[in-house]
Length: 200
Image (cartoon, rainbow, N blue to C red; front, side, top):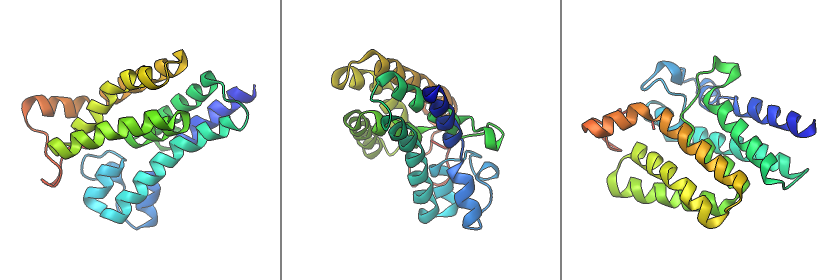
């Protein structure tokens, strides 16, 4: 029952929309009404500036890390850690407190991976950075990192629970980036620094 309770709390914690809260505190418009209408760090960065974007990014990562670390206080069982990680990510993407209109989950996914296995998290971050710096496309970085995640997990920590979690994260991120994938295939996805683009 304790683990069930912690999993529910992980979802509720993930449901706290960092983007909406940061924008309210900084007197900015609701991110769900601006730009790509996505309550994520990239969208906030575009119209709210670096401080708001960085604050949103940090908050989204933290709300992925904390639920997993909270479970670690009671057990290191990878099943329970994976459940908390999945719940926190679902909370971010489908927040009960904000009409189930959440972000695309890249930063929070990094946060939950950091809580489960920091080596996997940093390796995935490396893939994202290499892709973004190489192609100047944030969405392509997220999609590439998501596709590589199961292989990285298998190489660094082949436990079944984490492999299932990595596959789950990959599917969620790809589905949430469907519009970006369409834009990439048609050459319409804007590069970093090229002005307003679809949220990634």
